[in-house]
Image (cartoon, rainbow, N blue to C red; front, side):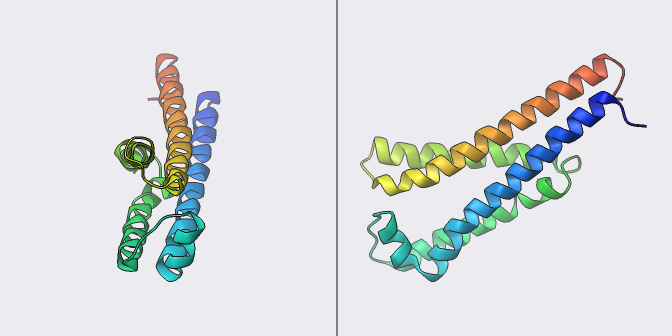
Length: 146
């Protein structure tokens, strides 16, 4: 039997799951062109780079990071820790690192696209995690969730 608190928690888990998959999709929009068309993609964002192996390596690393987001998207209850790690340090570091690189260290503004994607997905999934936690606490306080 499902309770009103369970329904609300499950809705927020669904929202979180959708956002995580959307974030993985956005990462793929960086990974695929960086692996196969790095010069075109770097030029699109105005990022100078001589040795394209570094662009491809960063794309490979982003792909690996994205794989670690999948367990929480598939089974949130079992992999809640992965969901938290996806926000901090992963998305938080990406957003902060590239923002600081552009603003303080004069890197090309094209890097802000990475920062904005990480900030958007990180902040929205964090909000979902906070709502899920609050609703679970309410449910426990009301005796609805064990």
